[in-house]
Length: 254
Image (cartoon, rainbow, N blue to C red):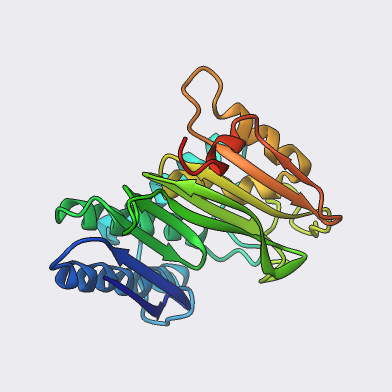
């Protein structure tokens, strides 16, 4: 069962393999609507907007809001300050961590309902579980940032997440917290594969903000542990650089 809806200002696609999935599908979409109502920086009545207007103190905010702030602070530490929810204009915008967190929570909701094979995509950031309806790994395209009508790579994933950060669609919306006036014209796309979409997404944007060093940062996340992260980076000349274990994800049966 598959459906696509516009939520959080982006297309959200959910596919659940199995019978009697309609109720779970509706619950997953309802969850995304809740996240939008709570964290949107475009909705005047959202909780984050009330915090920005100082109408609501963080300590009085919802558990989810306080959790997101905690996770954002953790990510800031783990990315050497390249992740920061404080915008150039001084406003708080946790969307850089909320989307992956929300996708991961929706995927967990589906899994806990008894469905192990699913696909959850919000704005191109994706978490998949198990296998597709044909019994294969989920095939996911990495878009060519210099020609968005084609894919440069196809990756095959199961129980993984993939997030892409770049400037080729939304322009210069990413910033370097260490140099807020910096514009990005060298690296145009960075896709990160992680054990889930939350982990992939929270590292993709700060790694992109690091420029060419971002791919090295993702590689080092694997130091001393099983390989959980891989990345594929494309520069403005169309040249690609990948982490040492990325190619294994381009093989459908491995």
